[in-house]
Length: 212
Image 1: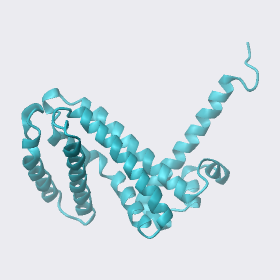
Image 2: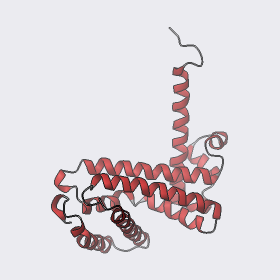
Image 3: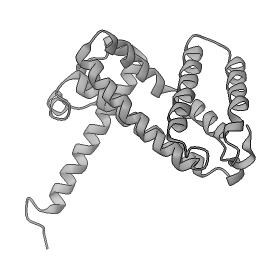
Image 4: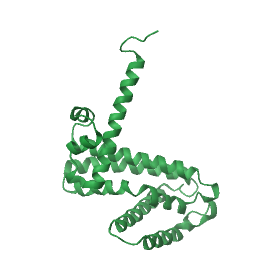
């Protein structure tokens, strides 16, 4: 039996096409931010990279700010999901805070950080963009905090300790990422991360190994 026009099957197909268009736009935006920076990332450039129409872009994301903020949030959510999946596949004895820091450093603070940095700089002198960016950062941090509390519940029972500890960790990872962009040698960056893990290990006594 042939389904009539407008059935759920047709709507699902349209939804899938819409989702695919949206994904192409988001991926193209991140690629442009990383390669060309905020100033040179235009909706015209993103549409060209994504291979979609200008009308499709406006339908999903009316402005450049809408597009870039959505793309960055999409990327950050994906990186958190990838982090959780990869970390869960580690042997239990290797699921330590030190291993989590290394995984964040190697897998999450790469193109995510570069795109993030572009928005930090752009938002500095744009009050409207800054307000939206602050809201995005707050949502991302709360999601990340929930993830780390789930991974290390014993060590992060103290709510204030958990919040400050994650801020400290992110500050270090951001600094290492800036160092990478500035051409610091990988060995030197690794030595800093190793030292940080050694210093913070006593605060996680109930995790596997309790050390880096």
